[in-house]
Every structure is written in C-alpha cells, then in structure tokens.
Amino acid sequence: MIVLEWGLGWDILRQVKLGIKSHFQSGNSNGQGSITYMGGSLPKMYATSREKFSEEAPEEMPVSDMLVDSFGRLHTYLRISLTERCNLRCQYCMPAEGVELTPSTQVLSQNEIVRLANLFVSSGVDKIRLTGGEPTIRKDIEEICLQLSSLKGLKTLAITTNGITLARKLPKLKECGLSSLNISLDTLIPAKFEFMTRRKGHERVLESINAAIDLGYNPVKVNCVVMRGFNDDEICDFVELTRDKPINVRFIEFMPFDGNIWNVKKLVPYSEMLDTVVKQFTQLKRIQDHPTETAKNFRIDGHQGAVSFITSMTEHFCAGCNRLRLLADGNFKVCLFGPSEIAFSPFPLSGLKSQVVIALPCSYGSSLSQVKRKKASHAGMFDIANTPNRPMIHIGG
Image 1 (spheres, rainbow, N blue to C red):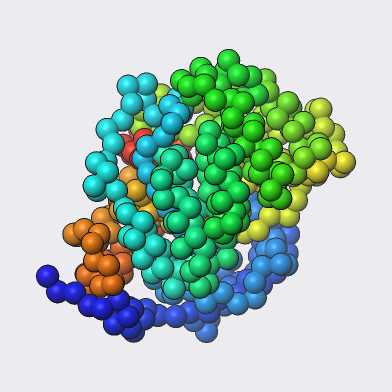
Image 2 (tube, rainbow, N blue to C red):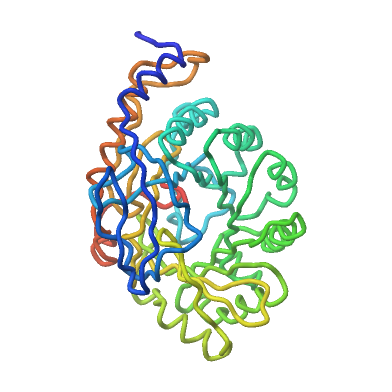
C-alpha cells in the first residue's frame, strides 16, 4: 500500500486546493447585495426567509474553493456523527423495531475523526458540531473534544445531545473545549417523555440543562420537535423556560426520515406555532438573523432567553445553507434530506498512526466534489417523504 508521511500529504493537499477570500457585505432588509468571490461578485443567495446580513459577520473568510458550491454558498460548518448508537429510542428518529447499526469496527475512530476534521478546518471550516446517535456515549468523547478544539482555525465546537448522561460529563467536556451545546427535549411532562423516547430519563435531561446554565453556557439551546396531538399544547410552557434562564428554545417542524412514520397531519407549521406564541407573549420581537442561520429567532421583553423556529418544511433556509455532514461510518452528505452519499475513503484509515494513505487527500477532494453538485434547495416535504433516505439516527442529528 502506498503511503505518505502526514506532513508530505498535507503539502500535496495544499497544492491542489484553491484558496479564495470572501467577505460578507451588509445589504438592505430585502437581503440584496453581493459577495466578493475570486475577484468578482455573485448575487447574494440568502434572501429566502432571511433578514439582512449581520453587521457582525467577519469581513474576510478565506475558504477553499472545494467548500464553495455552484450557488456561491460557503460551507464552513461540519457536523460529525460520532456514533449511530443511542440510549433513547425517540419515535421521530428511529422505527420501533430499531435499526441495523454499522459494526463498531467500521465506525470512524478517534484518530480518523480528528484527521478528517483537520482536513476540513484547514480548508476553511470554522465550526464543528458533534452529533449521533448520542455522542456522549462515546467513551473517548472528552479526548475527541480536546483534540478538535485544538485545531487551528476552529472557532466553535458544539454538540447536540439528548442530555441523559450530559450533566456528569459536561464539566470535563467544557475543560476540553466544548463551547456550545443543544439539548433535545420534546416535552415537559415525564409520562410523555417515556412515550416518545421509549425510555425513562426526563429528570436527567432537566438536570443537564440546569448544569449547562450553571457552567456558564449562554445560551443553552433546547431543541423541541413539535408534533400535533403530542406536544403542540406545550409550546407556551416551553417559552416560559426562557423567562428567567438563558435558554434558547428552538421549535422544530416535524421532518420525514425513513422509519419515523411522518405524516403531514402531524406537522405543526411555523406560522401556527408563531401564532400560538404571539397570543400569549405579545412582546415577541424578531431578531436579525445571520444569513447562514437555520432558525428564525425572536426575543421577548423581560425574558433572559430567546425563542426560535426551525422551519425546514414550510419555509426552508436552503439558500443560506453552509453545512456538510460526516456520518459515523465515514460517508459524506452535503444535504440532510438528499439521499446521495459518498464514501470518504476506499479503504480503512485506522492503524496508520503517523502516516496517511495517499488516497486520503484524493478521497477528500473527490468527496468535496459533491459540494459543487449540491442543489439549490431540498425537494419539498412531500417529495422528501417519498424519497428513500436513512433514519435520522444513521445520519446524525
């Protein structure tokens, strides 16, 4: 097998990458303006469900051409699934009978995760989110965080977790560089929690939310998937969580994935959720969103926290998408709802220690060629529901 020393592999990779510089320029409230790109201008792609560019956006953001798609979107956010395993069985995430999991020997090792992440960060990725399954059940989660947070150029290391084991692990994770977190909680009623997750643990999730607040995370993001007939009557109760604590409640439209028995009748659209909140909280005010933001964000006068809506189904935010996904089995996806995947490497990377297979940089470039073929938007909720994809637990939250 042909191998290169890691440093030499990097030199080759850097030679084949095309560096670009791009900067965001503030536009008007209609999202008009331009992005400077390789000496020219592209129309701003972020008008859909967006306010103007944030004035706090960085003026310069060098990103490899491999991370720029044909619509000018810069993909600076990588989501890495650490495992397909989970200690809950949420109904919207996996079918009741469970799913066939990738053998542990074929799941990315710590060494592989860090090396692949290093490739992305060197190309311009500045945010990584760890997902699953449930990422905190990885025994090496602390070491993974420590190594990733040390990557030069990485600004944010985040995690999405169900919170079951988070409270006892969070102090160490923070020491290891975890800078942001999202905790999933779909109901404030313990009996409903057990019904939805098919497991106990409601109090442990609440404990994790409070532990995150005590450790100074601000905001602590709480993800709530809203489903008609299950928890749509709790929307305002969730909003109350933001009154005295730095909690950002994020209401998420129910999305279709293989095995979660999605039905449009279960979908509570953004407009309906917003109407429910406004009736009780009349001081709700829209916040200016960053162009790559997935949520529509609001504040309420007198509340410490915030309220957000993730409107993937009824008002997609594809025009500002900057996310890529590395799955636990090493496959690579450019769209959560797109069925297309590409294997990151044709042979295992583990056991290489200080060396790297010569195909790794080549595989990296080949995988990122998928970015150029990324579509302008997803197909729409009804087409998504009828298109084979993986269960959410395989993809990563």
